[in-house]
Amino acid sequence: MTVVEPFGLSVRDQALEADVQAGLAAVEEGLLAACKSDVPFITEAAQHLVRAGGKRFRPLLVMLAAQFGDPYAPGVVPSAVVVELTHLATLYHDDVMDEAEVRRGVDSANARWGNSVAVLTGDFLFSRASRILADLGPEAVRIQAEAFERLVTGQILETAGPRDGRDPIEHYLDVLAGKTGSLVAVSGRYGAMMSGADERTVEILTHYGERLGMAFQLADDVLDIASDSHESGKTPGTDLREGIATLPVLHLRARAAATGAPEDLELCRMLDGDLSDDALHAEVLRRLRVHPALEQARRDTIRYAEEARGTLAPLPACTAKDALVALCDAVVHRAG
Image (cartoon, rainbow, N blue to C red; front, side, top):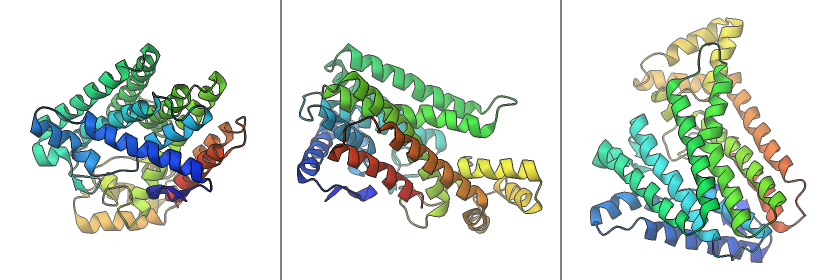
C-alpha cells in the first residue's frame, strides 16, 4: 500500500492509506485554488511549480500527525495547504537568489519570466497562505509567523556566512534548522494541533518534524553529489556548479584543513575553480562520490533521522506511528 510514491513509503493499513491519500488529494485541490487569480498571468505563474509536482513532504507529515487526533477536523487540510504554499513561495525566491534555471524538472519561474515576476509570485503565494491562516485562528498565525522568522533568519545567515571563528559546519546546520527544519516542524505541529491532539503529542510531533526536516535536507545534499538521476528535481551536481557549500563539501574542507592531505587540498582547489567547465565539474563529482566526506554526510543524515525516530517513543503504538517511523527510513534511503 503506497502512501506517497517519491519516498516509496508504504503502510499496511487500508484505512490510514485512504485517509492520507484523500487528504493529499484535497491539499492538491486547495493549492490550485489558492494559486488562482483574476489575472490569468498571475494564475499561470503561481501554479507553475504546483503543476510541476513535488514530493508534498510537508502536507504528508500534516496528514500523518493528524491521525493522533481527528484527521477529518476542518483545519487539517487548510493548514497543510498553508505549509506547502509557504514552501513553494520560498522556492520562487530561492531560485532568484541562486540564479537557478531548473526546478522540479521544468524551467524555474525566474528563467521563464524573469526575476521580478518570480519574486512577486512568491510574495503572492505568501499572501494567499496568510489569508488561509487568518481563518485558522490567532495561534496558527503566531506559529506561522515564528516559523517564518526562523526561515528568513536561516536564509540571511546562509547569505552572510559564518562569523569569524565559527565552525562552518555548525553554522550550516543552524542555517538548515531555520530554512528547512522550522517549516517541517510546523507541519507536524499543525497536523497534531488542528486534529485536537493533546499538548504532549503536539510537542512530540513538532520536535519530530524539526529533526526529520534536517535529515530530509541533508539527504538532498548527499543526493546532489551521489545520484545519477534527477531524484532531487535538479541535475546532479547543481549545488556544486552554483558554488553552494553543502555538508559533504564542508566536511571535505574541514578534513583538508585538519590533515593537509594533498589530495584533499587539490580537490578543494578544484571546487574553487570554474565549475561551469563540464569536464572539471564531472571530475569533481567523480572524486567526491568516493571521498570519505560524502560518507560522513550520510552518517549525519542517519543521525538526524534516528533522532526523529527517537522522539516518537512516547506515542502509543499505532499504524500512524509506524508510518512516521517508516518516513525516517525513507529519508535515509534517499541518501543511500
